[in-house]
Amino acid sequence: MEIDLIFKIAAVGIMVAVLNLLLSRAGRDEQALMITITGLIVVLVIVIREISDLFALIKSLFGF
Amino acid sequence: MEWIWKAAGIAAAGSVLGLLLRKHAPETALLLAAALTGLLLSVGLDALRAVVRFARTAAELSGVSAPAVTTVLKCCAIAVVTKLTCAFCRDAGQEAAAAALELAGCAAAAYVTLPLLETVLDMIRSCI
Image (spheres, rainbow over the protein chains, first blue to last red):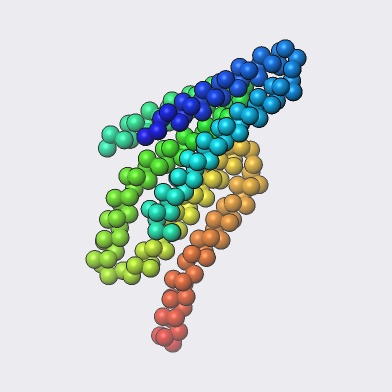
């Protein structure tokens, strides 16, 4: 059971949120947006791999 | 059976982390929920493997044809995938996409059961 995955995503999310807040307060909204998008892409890559594994598991289990 | 306690713990921890992220990074919170769902479902499906094996054996012993069992299992898979993906779309606030996916799931299930329905029609034709 890969609980590390959940903590990894949460860590990326917290980092992105803190950086976003700091950059927004510093008046650098463009950089904050870029940080948000980068974090989102990183998490998306991780999640897509997991979802792909899940669909493969469902296919093998139900005989597709 | 120990996995159910672990799954419950993971669900609780993931939900709390999702709540933490929802205010400042809602996109990441949504992806966290997706990862959590995938993880928990993969755990549940591992346990379901034995149940599916038992169902196949029981069907074989009772003389039910293998294609019929496969069709039922395929419908189950379509239902699981459709339900989860619809819930994900609803979490993201995309009600229309969820409704469209529900319809697509119904169509896919009907398509998968077509061979069985054709068999039934053939049986009726042979009886007439």
